[in-house]
Length: 430
Image (tube, rainbow, N blue to C red; front, side, top):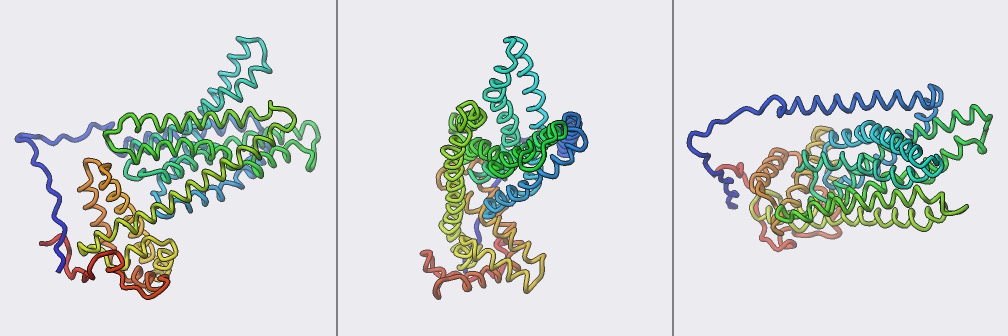
């Protein structure tokens, strides 16, 4: 019979230690309340500013057109995050920050800087060009990067690698682009109302084609460079202080540079925009998409490589590393649970898959000396979450492994471990 893993040991506290309650400003509900209030106020202010500039009718037209790419972009980032999905609250925060706080910072700072440059140089045309190619990339990418930084600092357990950085950064930029597109499309509609533009020759149609059809991925593309930098920092060991600081800064500088290059493409001649779009933006988009998908596949390989150790200890069934390392098998397990035990069982299987992926990632970092001081405690927490869901997950994963395996396989020897019976007791007990 397999022996259960030992309890983590906790060092005794010093004698006479008095536990103190956190100050009122350190309480969770206070932080959540302050954040929600900040985002709500930013949303109201940005709504008033955009509506004043576009008018009510222009705002509604811009809103209706700007929302079109949002579901597709959010779905794409959620698909990328499917191996170890982060909590929805992080994504809601990221989108709200981009659409409200970051957009407000950008509008106020860009307007102030452009007016100051125009006044200082007495050349409004050059001020607009300088504002678009220099000021806007710095301000906007910094404002969007703040959301990634906040999740990195305060939701560290949900931020474990490059995919997490790409997803948080991409969702933040999607929210920012949504608000910006309302402004641009609403303003274009107002211009058409004054000039009488109609049909495909209208400014609204041209703006819609460039921003919604051709380049809905532009802002997410820029900011994912920042996300990759933070993801690389998350993969670094705690003692690698320079790397943990320099990689996010490097990603942010790349995002600003790419943004500036894109904004300045209109100054490169008659076909400068199309040259930059076809020769630079599309290839970089393809490269980053490949990198994100490759990173996702690497997560699955890590699951298959690290989880067999828990098979030997009796925490997991012999077939589970294979099933958890295959997206097809994971989907089959959820479908099996939903068909035989209903939606709650399918949700339990999905949670089991996410916790198992986090466990594999934690063990992988630990073997490389990057597990952190709370490695043992975190490992125990994840194992506990898996054990709570084993009754729903284990039969579903066994079925999925059999259904998706290319040929009959005896699971345990495949991974180099002897066949291990499931523990008939709770492993926390001696």
